[in-house]
Length: 110
Length: 112
Image (cartoon, rainbow over all chains, first blue to last red; front, side, top):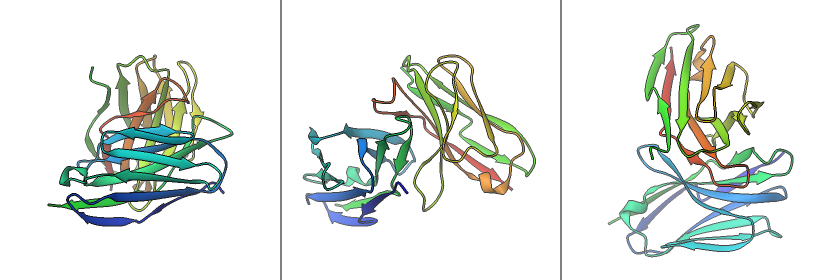
């Protein structure tokens, strides 16, 4: 069964803290996505990566293919980072199908 | 660019009623997707269209039909709504399977 596990499920931080959200998956994948779902419900794609590391502003995503693990880091967290962060992977078979994690609810307090 | 648009934003149906959720994108994307999001579960793929003229089943297609009307539009139809179809529905699109997906704002559907 192709599964993706995210941890933690819920995370509360103080403004300025360094945040790490983890994602583990069970099969060989072709790409992993990180998405952000705002409190109002909208979903935005943050990263798509298949190896190494990507950085965009205060967000960093890393992936270790051998260990089947990815992390999303947020440096100098801010209350506007409060959202649900979702990882999803694309694997062999149909490249059009993504398997999604249940998400990590991040709350950053001022 | 409006990106991906969905109509309606909210809908309440009675069991057995039918309705069509509309989705359109103005990014000239080849591929389009319909997902549902339920509490405590990850997004699940209902149907997708890899390119204009093709559609394929996703993880949870039962009770739904789709139409890729043209390159811009991809509609999702519930022929006979059931309470189990109460959910938030998201449409998404991308240039192809190797690209990130762009999501619409979602439709919150309640079936009573």
